[in-house]
Image (cartoon, rainbow, N blue to C red):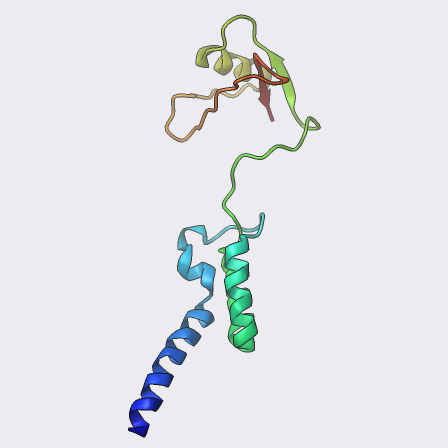
Length: 136
């Protein structure tokens, strides 16, 4: 009877410690490995903090592993930094992908294909820069 109780306590404890030792972000978000910096993912930080509250050493190790692997950071995405580093380009008439591509080429010298699967375009439905392209 005593052996069964010890096994029923030991097994979940071992599993819980193993998960904390390997880092929450590393297990839950392995595709994020290799990121060097960025905004912290609050859910991963919270899970690591729970490990820190209940098990001090595994929680510290979880934070260290997640920071080292870069899995604690949110993936990159679009962000706005105001107008400090942006160039506003006015496009006359209807704004089409071809006109945008031409404007980018004229101002940066770089060819882009807005129909490429790796590029995400978002329609501007109004606002201050209606009919303009912001390029960084």
